[in-house]
Amino acid sequence: MASKAPVFEKIYQDYLTRVTGLNLTGKQDLLGIEVDGQTITIPFFNETCTVTPQKIVDHNGRRPPHSVCVILCQYLLLSPDVLDDGRELVTYRDFRDAAPYVQGFDNTAQKPVSRSFAGRLAELEASCRHLGGTPCDRGISCDLSYVFEALPRVRIYLVFNDADEDFPADCSLLFEKQAAEYLDMECLAMIGMVLAERLAGKDNPDIAMLA
Figure 1 (tube, rainbow, N blue to C red):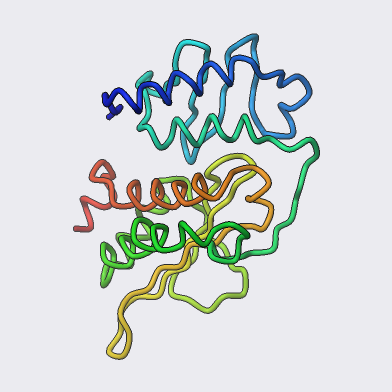
Figure 2: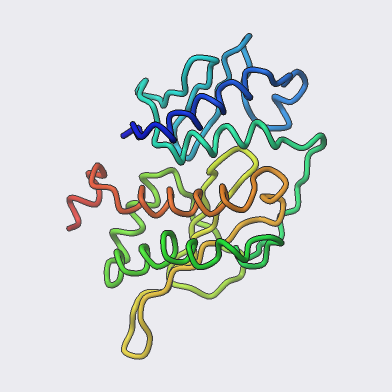
């Protein structure tokens, strides 16, 4: 649901104005987007969003949550001039300038997944697949590991170990090192929050059947 608070509406309109002034000629391949005049199409997780000078809409034609609007606009505004393909995995706290957001990232992204899916490994896997996640093996020992393409150049990796008699369930969300070239630390933290919220969504029929 789109926020109606005046401050959020002002931020939203400011972002639209800034994005409208961008010259994205030659950056379609760099960012993995499509540009048709002043209409920009951006893949976001397993859906497609559209940005125009007037509005931002998701694949259903609805305005996304404020956090998603900010992420999409920042992805366009911060686009580098050359492709960075650094695939080394890092934790969120490993990024330079991440320190002010580390606790918030843990509280809004990693811990919610740990709590929501403790003892529910099958449900978590169904939810990962529902969101377009792909099973992956990056040499990390765990019960379940999936990678999500949040944006064409920003992938997020979920590494999950279920609870056992000695340890509680634990979720780690990792990024490729290159992610910091495409989004700032606040937006990367929000990527994790969006993933956690969508994994716990109630609109997944596969999860409903397993519950």
